[in-house]
Amino acid sequence: MNGEKSRVNISRREFLGLSALGLGISLAGARPAVAASRAAAPDEVAILYDPVKCVGCKACQMACKRWNKLPNESTDPLGIYESPRGLSAITWNIIKLRRTDVGWHFFNYQCMHCTDAACVEVCPTGALHHDPMGFVALDRDLCNGCGYCTQFCPYGVPHLQVENALTGAAKSAKCTFCQDRLRAGIGGPSCAEVCPVGALQWGKRGELLEKARARVAELQAKGMNARIYGENEAGGLHRLSILLDEPEQYGLPSVPKTPGLARFWQRVVQPLGNVAFGAALAGILGVFLFVRRKIRMEEVR
Amino acid sequence: MTVQLRGRAEAVTIQWIPKYTFLERLGHWLHTATFVPLALTGMVLYFPFLRPLAQGEAGEFFRLVHRVAAVIFGLLPIVYYIFQPRRLLLHIREFLPRKEDIGWLKAAPAYYLLGKHEVMPPQGRFNAGEKLNGLVMMVTWAVFGLTGIPMWFGKGVIPPELFRWLVVFHDLAMIVAVCMFLVHLYLAVAHPLMWAGLVSMRFGVTSAEYAAEHHAKWYYGPKRAMEIWEEKKREAAHH
Ligand code: HEM
Ligand code: SF4
Ligand code: SF4
Image (cartoon, rainbow over all chains, first blue to last red; front, side, top):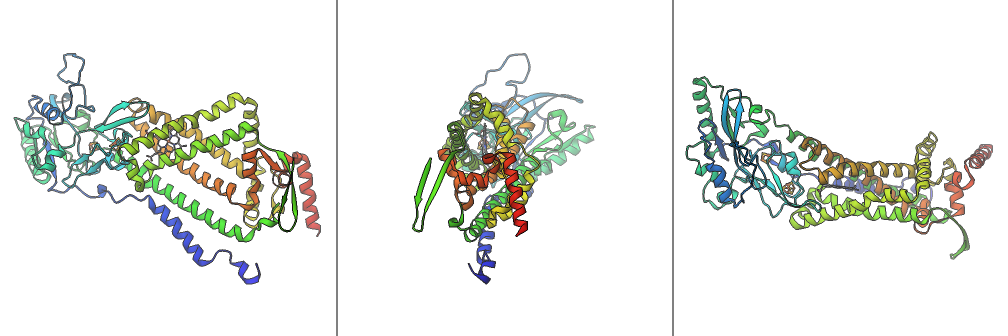
């Protein structure tokens, strides 16, 4: 190494190459922009539930079991109207009896098909994804059973069908909006199709919101404290509900919080990690190139 | 043990002295042999561009490998220290950060980048950089276990609110540990000054001359090492 040349140990080209490497790795993990920032469009499909119309006949619950070929679930007969006790890997739709401050009434629970869906955000396989029609689909063949969705959903909807708790072999399960029916063009979700009193309806989200607003006005005129749940929650739900009290009275969060943490994990922690990997690898390679010129093995003891 | 290496110009004589016990080396390599598959199988879930590997049966397989490796990775230090309780005390003493580690930090750039031996104050059997690596591996081992075990068995048992934070911290531990591992890997296999490190972790011995130069406090004992170091500094100032 002599004079002029030895002062520049890393050439400009190498420096640019290293920077490109670091940047490349930093971006390698970047998520394709998921639908989270978009709002639910009016022509997407949705379900509207009206608990005032609901007579608690459970036809929806049965229709869901039948269409999705879900087995029976044994439950403890405690004389409670609710059976089984809640959603599970084999019960995707359930009627529960709620006692709110304004009295007893039925409420139907199923997946809310969020626009800003925590489950989609954290699913590492894409098994959970936004169907272009608007609902949140689940393709079970892609699922690897990690169970993140079951822990991040703010409504506690997905459940793991566990084959082996030790190895972790499992598949996630939840209401799919009867995705197979919609994709095949057979009709709408079986629960809404079967409801004899129109408490569950399905259709275009924009139109259902109109109906819901009219219905809320009607109920308010009768002196009820009615409101719509799902218009803006979690980016807008594709399962809209009419409530007669605070969401908490139905076990629903007023502000579904989880999407924030899911996004923090996926869009802050993980990208920062990628920047760290990129910087580490590019830095090491740079040091390697530099040191190879500076320190001669023959002089080392 | 003395070995002669013949090059074109001259013969180099290396005198080997023991540095690591057999169990220390076995532990080190079992740690490596489980850490690397753990990092790779974990990344299958972490990197969106590896998504095809995470899907369906492939994903189930990698999750299973992660669990098998995690059992060995988790039990390894525990089993090791049950059989080697005195090494536990020794390692704690060797790995605790000390004030003088700042001296290593100040000298590190000139030492590692320019090969300036004379600026580096005497180091123990593990230099401050190796201590940092060791501490990061110990702390992240605990974080992996404390977060990973409830992630394995805790679904439906612990509150989801807690689970969510566990995955985030499992990822943070992975990011820190993998960056540290990359630096460690480079220094071990490709840095010219560190040539004896890999030899000693494989065969348990190191060159006496290398030890005197790089691990003086261990080779001479702390007191004598400092004396030699002060003496050298005085001499250098004289010239
Ligand atoms: C005691 C040791 C460990 C245990 C018990 C453990 C356990 C787990 C579990 C249960 C999961 C969730 C996936 C599943 O359910 O199969 C997971 C994910 C993961 N693990 Fe570990 N693990 C351990 C060590 C490590 C190590 C050493 C690394 C990396 C250096 C690592 C990196 C990861 C990563 C990157 C993920 C994916 C997280 C994500 O989805 O972003 N783990 N681990
Ligand atoms: S309710 Fe839960 S499972 Fe359904 S879309 Fe929202 S986050 Fe996903
Ligand atoms: S359990 Fe299946 S659907 Fe749920 S997050 Fe994991 S891969 Fe996705």
